[in-house]
Length: 323
Image 1 (tube, rainbow, N blue to C red):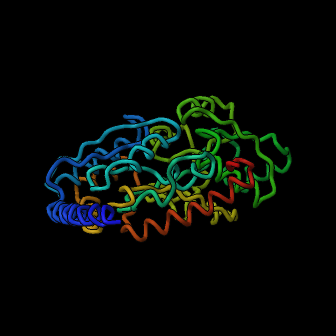
Image 2 (image 1 turned 180 degrees about the vertical axis):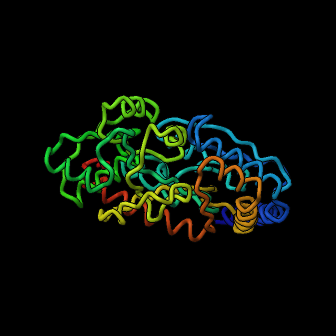
């Protein structure tokens, strides 16, 4: 017992010193480069978003923001690395919600929502129903009428099973009682080749990924999966406006490891707010057709938890939830 008391007595000052050091470190944060992990490959839309935000964020923090790509396994490798990183604010994730709100329901992962502290939401990704220019369908009503006449005969392509457009289109099937033929691809690029060649009825795709095809007139949009119209394509209705009661949210932003101190998270959130509002980032976003949607950490967390519940229900209905 005496030995235990002596050991405890020696441990208490050490714990206090560690706590004081942590507080001091939080007060002068950041005093070295911040690392932003992107859980998808370099060169894609998310990577470009991260690098432009990182440059604006660096100006606000007074330290370099170094972007690194840890891609693989639908974003879960990168998020797992951040979840297990030291919780000091120097390692962050810049990610869409899917690896956090959807993948933990599909796969047995070492992390979950409680493994992170949401810092700020930065963007919305708006997906749409896209058809070739020569398609006879001019609206969702046309598409659904064709699907009712030929159950299972209308095919659509997505970037993969369990992806946002797959889940959203499965919801369309559920609420309209039609049967569509899902053709999953390993990314948007191969899907778009078949869509443009007329081998698919429609594609469910991220609008910012098909800016060129929309600009050239090779593709047309029938509706968007979001709860609001895309600002660059204001003539395209939402699914709800088209009489289909479906909203499939896709959004993302910055996450920190769960035990990151409040003072550090507050500093990062304030810097994020200013970076997102900066002319530098806003100009890039407009040119890339990227929808900007800043929300502070608490609102971002609420959005993530709501999305997690929605994704879990859809995955269970499709038989894709982990057992």
